[in-house]
Image 1 (spheres, rainbow, N blue to C red):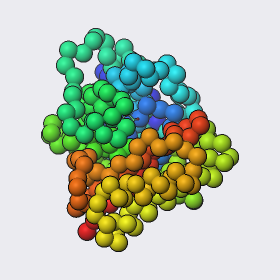
Image 2 (image 1 turned 45 degrees about the horizontal axis):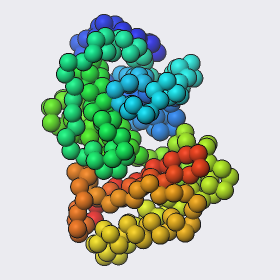
Image 3 (image 1 turned 60 degrees about the horizontal axis):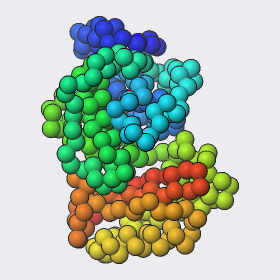
Image 4 (image 1 turned 180 degrees about the horizontal axis):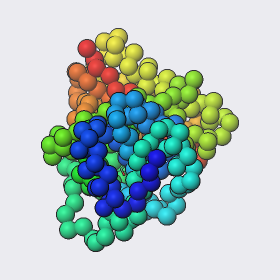
Length: 282
Ligand code: PAF
């Protein structure tokens, strides 16, 4: 595995890869790698000649109240994980390398941002879309891999690629779950013993929502309140949101049709957990 910190070096390697007509699988991350990232790397490893992983904590996607300096980092550990997962090129640029000057142009996401987690993170997805635009140009991947756990990011990235005609395919990778259904997350360790026992209820509540739809319920409000009641009765978490939206448009609807997402965020004492299910009514 080659660790590359400059854009110049990356360009040279990508040029060679292109000359050899090798396919490139790309997994963009902000490091502190976990099971979810491993799943992305595993799939990308299987499907491509070359596997590129980027680790870059992108300042543009942090709001003024979100502490960029406190974002967890452990490059040595990440490097070992990347090696185990068969990464060929680990792109690890500094902020100065990625943003040598204040940008005079940036990408603004105009739809899908005022719902789910985007509601409380203004500007976040502009930062994500801007850095991915740069990374996609630099890495020139054949396929780029994103987790379904962050479904809003996935939907926005799919639009970015479509709207700007990036010649690459976005691969959506299923959420990795514990045996009891709890979505794997580095935040799960912050749950108390009691909260850890309660937490699988989140996924079970989402599944209950799907069952209601499959049983013929089409009114989103009834499904959302069914899920909220169950979470309130069976957990000590505080519900941030439960939403039922069309997917991938992320729009509210009065009657469910076609593809939809049921997503939730619940705050426990020291961890805010998110989860979702994307389904098609038909
Ligand atoms: O999901 C993340 O880790 C980040 O939002 C991403 C896609 C690497 C962009 O900085």
